[in-house]
Length: 416
Image 1 (tube, helix red, strand yellow):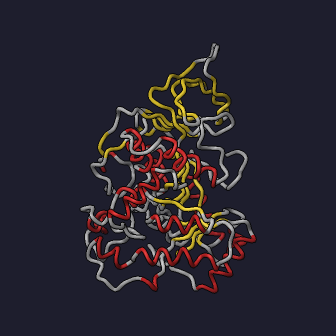
Image 2 (cartoon, one colour; image 1 turned 60 degrees about the vertical axis):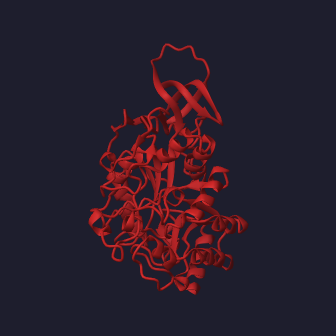
Image 3 (tube, helix red, strand yellow; image 1 turned 180 degrees about the horizontal axis):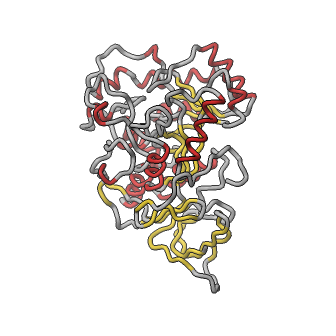
């Protein structure tokens, strides 16, 4: 296949021809003489994104989401690779459960996917199937925290097997007894100081490759950078706050912070100081979110991750390079994948957008299963076309891919 259009390449918009062979970019040329059919793509050609933090709820909670609906939603938002978290039912905490979950993903996922294992005593065997593990330092949606001594032992074993460990950083000892009746109270109940203390506590724990999930403040970012970790932020911590009129629909762990904190976080992102943006797509059904105290924590977001930020590019609030690097290039490189660039030798995971097609986010037009979004009414630019491995899976903003079309990934696998 040969496509023609305007592509974003290393900081510039270039009119070019892109040759695709066996799912990879074979060439990128400014001019081309050929007798082969050339497909003209309107808009701007960008690398598709990689989301390092999703909860597709499969197995065990498929009334909220499953690998098919979650991956279709991702694809329609320009995401062609995801990493799914282990707090499913049952937990992904053993070799057999991990192997079974891989089978589920291979059967249902329309895009490439990887899996986090829950750090457990089965670490050595599980590391044959994944090099990525998750630790919850405070309880969150079905997962419990580990005692310090047990955690240190498991981290040593993970490190000896060349594994990366992602941390949900909150210290439950610093949780306040303030009633959880609104977003402001929830922020005080699980305060920023609990996040900061948990990040600092990692200094005394083994492991060379520590990944800090959903940072909510610039102070968290400073500590992550100072200690040589890698960190991510989410669109909801960038764009929403306790001042948002969301009630229980804005309840997440760690909580939304005050606008003053959010503004500082956005400023750091705008300056290119944050490596990775992930959605932490964590859907729950609407009826579960009606009562604040009983509502489970989490919001959907995989489909709106890239489009919301691309709209910010169109408005001049952030550079295209910052968005592409944090959503496409840096996450892919962390997984050892040759994705995230419009460049020879990289996977042909691409998308096109039209900067004139900014539109309000409407839950009825999204593809995830839970039927609502905290970003209702926000402006976004959704991709017109999305390609995975050189195959068009979204055309004219409609999903046209196939169930089971995705591959399971391991870090550094040569065919990915």
